Each structure stands twice: as structure tokens, then as C-alpha cells.
Length: 231
Ligand code: DX5
Ligand code: ZN
Image 1 (cartoon, rainbow, N blue to C red):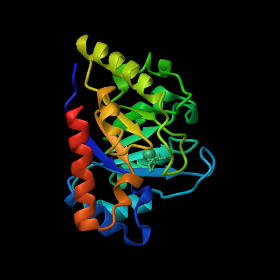
Image 2 (tube, rainbow, N blue to C red):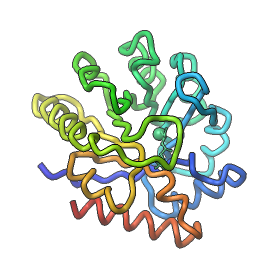
Image 3 (cartoon, rainbow, N blue to C red):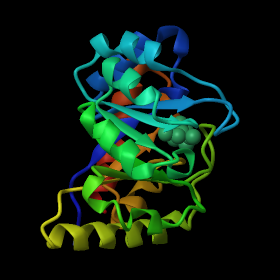
């Protein structure tokens, strides 16, 4: 079944952090659908980035939802903090939470869409008993921690498998679940990624390496959307 819903979520990990307000305004003006916000703690992943204060600081600069990707361990204490800071979507890695079902419920109780993130080697079986609590499933197509890495090709088969689980769930009357992909997404592979069943695409370096925010971001966003839609 072709999937024509395309959501583009630039990862601000590759943005100019000294000008973050301008950067998020520029990607919204360029036509993206979500702001992807990568939170790293130098514990779950070997890098350190941004927290709820920065989320709160960019919130007034954009209307579109903020998609918070938690690469932290433990998870739960940060959920209400990000919800208060204006997050709309919160995803986390199931290995980093002692009680995955409880964390999903906590995210929803805080008024956000909830999802889990699969590392390249994490099996999709984690989905089996929590389907009704998922608004999003995010497949990592790189190992988490850094922008600018190459897309891992075996993610395509994993996306097809996740897509068929989600479609089967929805065919049985289940709620819609977005299928997001994160890592190494570019204009030259987004078509194949969309064809494998993804509907939501994180792209960091592909977007922010464009030379000029006003025209460059818009050009990349259009190229990504066109290639994904054509698939
Ligand atoms: C990696 C992050 C990604 C990353 C994507 O741990 O979760 O969101 O910023 O960057 P690119 O698109 O450059 O691979
Ligand atoms: Zn991410």
C-alpha cells in the first residue's frame, strides 16, 4: 500500500546553535513539518547536547510540533520537564527505561504523543505488547549519538517489517502510528526509504548543510519532499 503522508523533521543537531531561534524559524518557513530535537546525555550515548531549557527557548519561535528524541538513561524524570518546555512528541529508547509501558503512559499523561526508538540492532519485538500505547515508532538508521553518519541499508527491510506490523494493527481497528526514520536521510535515498514504508523523515546534515538558510533550506526541503512523494 503506497504511503503518501510525508512529514519532514529537520534535526537541529546540525543547526548553528549560536543562532538557534533563527534556524528553527528558517526551517519552518522552508516548509518542514516538525522540529526534531536530539537530547543526548553522555551516558546512554557518547555525546552531550541540549535539554528542556533549550526546548523552552525555541518554543515561541515556531508553530510546528517539537519532536523530542530522548537518548538518555534514565528517561522518566525528563518527560514532564520536556512537556512543560513545549514538546509535542517524546520518543525514547526502550533499553533506557526500566518500565517501557509506564514511560509511554507517562508521556501521554503529560499531553504528548509517545513513541519508542529502535537502534539498528534492537529487535522490533519490543512493539508486541505495547502497540496500543504507541503514537510513533522511530527506527534509527545510524547508531545514535552523532549527525552526519551514513545510512545503514538493513534499515530498509526493518522498515518494511515495521510497516506491515503497523498496517496490521490499524486494519484491526488500532490507532494510527507514525513510522519515523532517523539517520543518514538524504535526497538520494529518501525515495527508497519512503517506499519501504516510512512516513516521517528526520534529516539533519542534509538540511543544515545547505549554504543559505532562506533559499537553501527551502530547496533541500522541496527536493526531499518530491523524492519521498515520488516513491
Ligand atoms: C543521531 C540523531 C539524529 C541525527 C541525524 O543520534 O538522532 O537525529 O541528528 O543527523 P543526520 O541526518 O545528519 O544523519
Ligand atoms: Zn534523532
